[in-house]
Image (cartoon, rainbow, N blue to C red; front, side, top):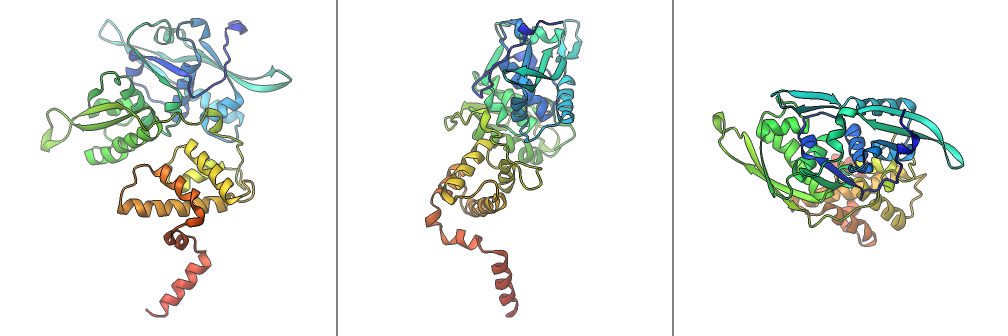
Amino acid sequence: MRKKKDIKDKNLKVSNIVEKRNILNESIYNMTLNSARLFSVYLSKINPRDIKTRSVRFKLDEFVEILGIDRIQLSTMERATSELLSIVINVRNDEEGYDAFQMFSKCRVRKTNTGQAKEWVIDIDAHDDSLPLIFDFKEKYFKYQVGNVLRLNSFNKMRMYEFLKQYEHAGLRIVTIEHLKKFLGIEIDRYNKFNDFKVHVLETCRKALAENTDIKFTYEAHGKRGERGKILELKFTITKNDDYKDQLSLDMYNRDGYLDEEGSDSTYRQLSLVCDDTFSISEIIVLCDLMLDKLDYDKELNKREMCAYLEQRYNYLKMRDEKRPIKNKFAYIKTLIGKELGAPKEIKALEETERQKKKREYIRSLYV
């Protein structure tokens, strides 16, 4: 049994560094968003030069923040830890085959004394076979701040970030679409039409990385094409994201954790949904604080009004964006809310109540 002193417990910050071997990053594996986040946070909490740090402890509050939820039950923790233990790595060996093994060997969930009261903790230990991939390496690896992937809301966006971050020093990466799909955890026969792949994968990832991480990219068709001019290969150009600013710390991700009337979703999540998930959670928090400050809303009683208010401004943003693309949508809507007293007529029109709209529609119908 591992000695208790081997379990390292330090506060998680978005500035914590993940050091990941290239061979581990290149190993094809599928994960859920939750298991991918936990995996990245695990790597950010160990010391890759000290194998004694192989067992990592998460406090419940930290676990909740990583998963981006408000409430947690034992069944939720069971599902998340089971997903983590199901991660299997396939590594090529010297016999022209591969070795397959679990990334983690054990998760232990329990209540323990931490100071004056007992609280839930989750201990996660790496599998013995995976240790050479995560400890004592000196070359062929890359680094990033864990906050870069925690701000992304899907597994394929996280993997796209790591796919490109590994080659940031080179500034470009060339890959077949087939291999890229495998890397991102996308079925080979999905998005067979390039335009579908472009819209649903490439563009969503490009936008997400530009808005939430320290790198950005462009892409273009590369190499020979297949039948009927089908694009088979892509060239990615990777650059530093000069517009990136280190955002709010992880403890802001699910701050306060207050719920709506049904207790099913956080206010931050509701606000994000009315904006079509256009903004990161830390940007939503900024907008929420701005609304509370400017409009004097009571966050416990007027969540619906706050969501309606933000939705109206987001609809106005979309209307303007259709006429002329808005480069920084977050800055635009933040400024829009900040200038509430001088709101344009178009915004005031969007604020009509349902009763006013029905009345206007009824009057119009009389003249049809």
